[in-house]
Image (tube, rainbow, N blue to C red; front, side, top):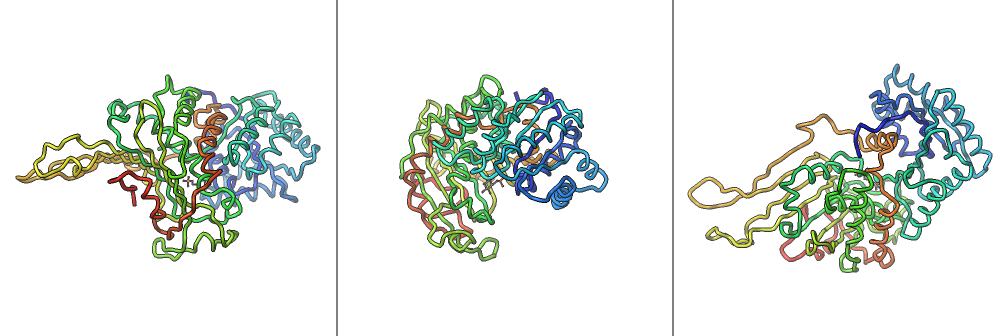
Length: 487
Ligand code: BG6
C-alpha cells in the first residue's frame, strides 16, 4: 500500500546515463530535494555511470554542481557537503566485462565506506536501445546479487511494440523478479494523477455516477506547445502513439475507468488496470486520426513545421498528433466512448480529463429542449493549474426560467503547498519498495497489444497548423453533437 509506513532504507543509487539529460533535469534535482528533506535519502549514495572519458569524482561533482545551480537548488554549504559525501562517478565505456567487474568493486567499496546495508537501485536513464545490453551485463556480472535488496528502474519507452516489450520482459525476468522491477511512467508520479484514485474512491457521490447510466463520454487530452526540441532522432522513430498514447494517456484512461480495488495495494490496483486494458475493443482504423504540425504561430511566435525541424526527414510521416475513440466492453462502460488525444505544438500546455454526464431525459422547462440543457461536466486538470471544475446548471435571476452553466472550482495552489515533482515521489517509492505507481510487465504488454493494429497499419497523417488543437479530421471521431474540449 502507498503509505509512509514502509521503511525507507539507505541505498546506493546507480544511475546509468549519469551525465544525461534526464539525470540533469529531473533525477538530480529530485534526489537532492529528497536529501535536503532528510528522508534518509541523505544517507544514500548516488553513483553516476556514463561513458564519458576523463571524468572522475571531482569532475562529476562539478557537473552536478552546474546542474543543481541551473535548477536553482545549489547552496554553497549544504549542497557541497552532500555532493562531496554522497555523489560519485564510475566510467563504464563499452561492453567489456572487466568494466562491469570494476563497477561491482566500486559499489562494494562505497557500501563499505558509507556503512550502507548493501541495498542497490540500478536506474536505467538511458535511450531504450541500450536497455537490453545493460540489463544482460548487469545480470551476467551478478551485480544484482547483494547483501541487501536490489531494484531495477527502467525509463519509458518500454519496448517499441508488443514483441519487443515481451522480449525485454523476458530478459528482465531472467535476472530480476517482477517485485524488483520499477517501470517508470512519470505521469503516475504526478500528484493530480494519484488523486484520481483518491477522488474516485473517497467520494461515493461520484462513484455512484461513474458508469454508463450517467456518463455520456470521457475525453482525455495531453497537449503541449513544444515541438520535438532536439529529440528528432528519437521522435522520428517513436511518434505520438508510442511517445504519449501507449503510456501516459493509457495510464490516465485506466485510472479513470478501473473498478474499485479491494485495497489500495500495488497489485490489486494494477490487476484492475490490466482488466480495463483487456476490455477495450480492438481498435479499427476509423477510430484513429493522426496529424503532423505544419508552420503556425503560438503566442504570436512563428513556429517551423515538423518537417523543417533539424533531424527530421523532409518527407516524414511521423505523427505529432494522435486522437482515438476507444470502447471499453464491460458492464460499467459499454456504450460510453473514451476519446483520447495528444499533440505537440498545440496552443498551450494542458493535461485534462473531461467527464461529460448525460443530460436530463426530458426537459420540464418550457421553451428549453432537453438537448439544449448543458450537460454536467467534471473537468479534472492534471496540469498546469491543477485542480478540478464541476459544471452545473443554475437558474439566472429574474422572472423567467433561464439556465446558465456555473462552475464549482478547486485549485491545489489555493489550498495546498506546492506539489512535489513526480520524480521525487517516484524515487521515494522506489526506495520504499512500493510498486503502486509503476507499470507491471503484463500491463505494459496489454497496452502494446491494444495499439498493435494501429502500429501495424497506421492511418494517413493529416497536417495541422502549429498553434491549433490538431487536424480537422479529428472531429469525425466524435458522435453528432459532441466536440473536443478544448477545441
Ligand atoms: C515524455 C515524452 O514522456 O513526456 C515527451 O517523451 C513529453 O515527448 C513529456 O514532452 C511530457 O511530460 P510532462 O510531464 O511535461 O507532461
